[in-house]
Length: 546
Image (cartoon, rainbow, N blue to C red; front, side):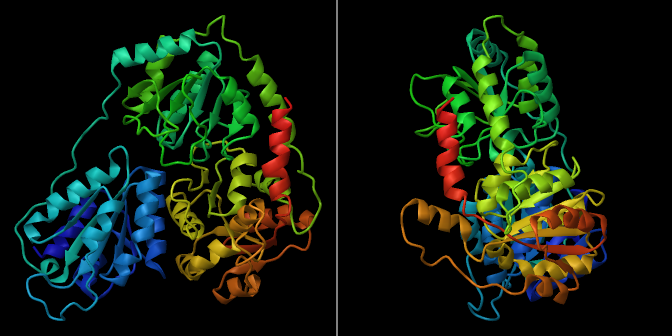
């Protein structure tokens, strides 16, 4: 069998449905093998988009998404998606081409040491130097990408190896179960929770996995212990739950941090220090219980005293079985915090200013989006407003990146989400800065016939850094930019462009876009003048006054 055919058969054996990417001349044998396979090639306009799509596919399915690029500049364009997937815990396999390794024909033209480049960004990276090794290399790449903690893997297939013949056979996938936590560790953690006066549950990115949502909801309902989430833990439990205490969108000073201050035991479920810390530990203040698939990575702000290491869903079930609500638990302070939080979250829902106020915009999006609709956030100032104010009803319905926090991923994430969930409403939310980093793939959206809406929040600047610059009392410098006419820009790709003239027009327009097939872009001017007042001062002052 031709080696490239064997490679594709190995991908099929892993259940691969799509390969996202841009091939080059070094991939042509592999491309021909893909043409006659069951796998669909999703041709993008930039390798970075292909990588973000593969990572999001992995995030939503738990199975490694696959992306393809050629050697040299094609491979280097996958560096940011590799970091995005590896830091964000998203299973992904990158495949890159290479010049012949048995006989050089073009010297060092386009040659980059891609293996060494990928080593710090992946869980596994190998060059395939023999066609006979393909089955083992592919199987190991998927195994490493998908096992906890998920992440990025990479294989380099040189063009001369791809056209070799081989008698090797595809390796079948293996059956495996994640290890469960030690009974004594569970008992120790349960005893600490039982003895606490004000226990609190924190839900992080690692708990945003299949079955975790069900077990965590049962744990909260059974024990009555209040909970809050990190940005990447949003939606694991319905945020309309009466025991929800908010999202740690801000590093400190929010209402949720007043609850954290008074907690004497925090059950930290699925937290990873790669995500921006939701709270800072200080010696002697409280007991922190680390519940995760792997042991804690200790640093100066995170050094848990008890670790429950194993399958998260099973660990939470074990803790639930070991616990009953305790008469001495006192959640009255948490109830007070929740009352003040709820009151503050409602402020600004009817703000009529235009350009739109972020709170009004988030409220309008929430009112229009169905419970299972998926928001895919790029990285910018709006991410804080959505993380704090948008109340998720289901897991993985707010896809944001609080690990690498890269710009340019919002549109590709929405594209992948629509492919994975073709019957659900999908909205990409991006600033003008992040959107323009990968806006060329509007053409891909149109070509694929995707039904999705791009909500473009325009402030004609790199708004988040501009906010930080102002907060540090620096003059405005180096942040403002010009933009195209985004309505016409969308139309030039064959998409539908829209621009509301008032805040009142926005929600009906968004509803119309969600109900109308095709690719829609809504150009919404946004008013970030309240960033400093609300996020840096008002919230701190009101929470401190409780």
